[in-house]
Amino acid sequence: GLSALPSGETPRTQVEARTAAKGVRPGSETVLCATDFRQRPLMFLEPQEWAEFLRQLPRLREHLKACQAEIEEMDEQGAMMRDYFLRRQHIPDKHAEKRIGNMRYGYDGRSYETGRMG
Image (cartoon, rainbow, N blue to C red; front, side, top):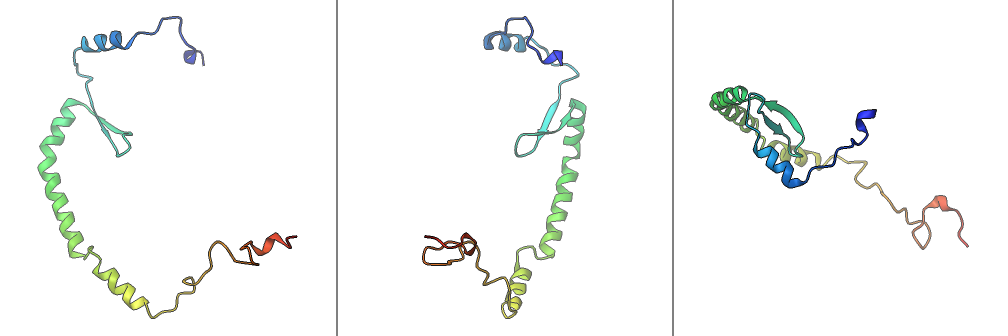
């Protein structure tokens, strides 16, 4: 709408914007932004929420260690999958010999659907 139109104000320079930002005192609205690997915001934490998170951190670490032990117990290192693939070696795979891509029709490798050339 109309709010997307540029206003008649002259834009501030970077120096003016930085000076104004330095003059702002942190208040109760100061938050911490938690992002994912692409730096997309996932959540915003207020100071008291951040303090609670730090208080819960040892419990979270213990839970993470318990989950890692469960994974190691289930043999996530891959021995079960290696055994599975060894068993599968003697079962014929109908997709193993599929010809993907170029069908090599004719001497120049064109596909059958192109029809007669020349």
